[in-house]
Amino acid sequence: MAEETEFEKALKEFLANHNKSLEDVIPKQDLPGEVQKQIVEHIHKVSGVGSHGTQYYRKLKTFSGKVPVPSGELPFDIWFQQADQMVKEAQLKEAEKHSRVAECLMPPALTFYRKAAEELGPSASSQSLPEQLAQAFGIPCEGDDLLTLFLDTFQEQGENPSAYLTRLETRLNQSIQFGGVDSKEADRLRLSQFIRGCIYDNGLVGVLQLRQKRKAPPGLVSLMQEVRTEEAAEAARSARRTQGRSTKKAAANPTSAESPSPKLEKEIASLKAQLASLQTPPESPVQTPNDNLSKMMAEMGELRSQLAQLRSQPQSRPRPPRGHIKSPVSAA
Image (cartoon, rainbow, N blue to C red):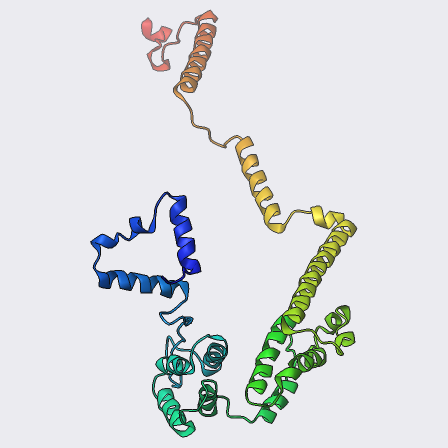
């Protein structure tokens, strides 16, 4: 009986914690032998161990070498890094590594790969074939030219030191890939060019004392951690300085700080005008029925008083018209 893998042991422990067994999940008596075999192979595949004891590795992304890069594919420099890592680290046989690289290629890259395999013969290593693809699809430069490009890479205005270091590392990897730089010199060259090229944040170089570390240069991860930590500290100091200047300016000009804005003054003037219009009585108020009745009663009272005055005066006999008065001569 084959020895249990770590996955199988972990699976049994998980099922035991739930009062279950492997037979409860996979009832062998109800499944055909072929189905049981497929299930076991799937468990081995998930656990990372093949049927012959070889390790499985994640399938590489597709690369065809077409320009522009089709959707779903990777540029050559990224694909090459993943393929190079697979052939160096995966615990696979050489023939299987060749197959893994070939199965992710599409023409015209696949055509070049097959031609390189024929020229190098069956003794070609799995690492040499991706390097042959680099001759056709990599950067069309010599290693020395890439090293010159790396030494001419400087920080751009407004670029964070960590972003500059990332861009610098890309150029350094390209130079190493095409033989311009020995990988053993990578840490020294990286630190030296970072000190030389970090022209907009040279104070960071002094704070981290990077010049004193040239004899024992840190690796990429350690250097990036130091740079990002100092970046965050400088950003916090800058924010405190800006806040302090604002506070001092407000203390020096208290009236300006308390004066309302023009928009607020306009709203206040509008409210005052509305309040004044409400307090001023209208020019021609609308008369209600009660007001009309009071006015009529006052007029009637005035008329009564005038009538009473007329009645209290003595009455005089009315004089006849002058034409009707008879003279004494005519009467005789």
